[in-house]
Length: 188
Image 1: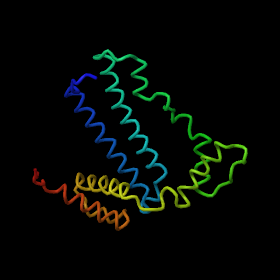
Image 2 (image 1 turned 180 degrees about the vertical axis):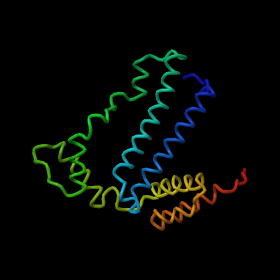
Image 3 (image 1 turned 135 degrees about the horizontal axis):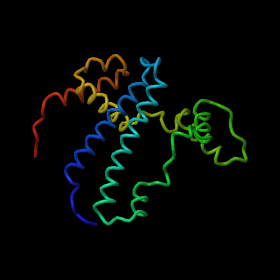
Image 4 (image 1 turned 45 degrees about the vertical axis):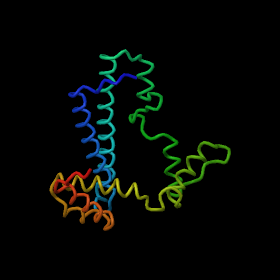
């Protein structure tokens, strides 16, 4: 592996795109809260796809650099881009997506002979019945609080956190925003 650092203009562009994607992710979380019930379908989809598209832009900038300025093969580049995992949103939700939602929301169980459908249905049930999401995951809570606190600090609207977040998330997000308010000394 070569040890040449990423060129500075590319690094700056990637940082900007990641920042935009994170802001979009925060808005996805924001629109899941009960106070935004009137618009959650539209805005969660718009912001989630904005985040995805923005990260795709970052990936393509890096890939273009690799293609133009390194001796990386197209096969290697395709493997790094994980192109086998890619699927178009234009095709809409797949049957596997519908089966998982059916499991989450208590929909009809697939036929016993369709093992893959049963697996996806069971995966959805795990979300709803307490397997995957019942316990408050400290990492998930911290991630949500960091995203909300960062956005509140950037917008200089820390008080708005109380208007749309559950109290325990708002309290942690407020702490994050407060830390970001004043530069902290570096301790060695």
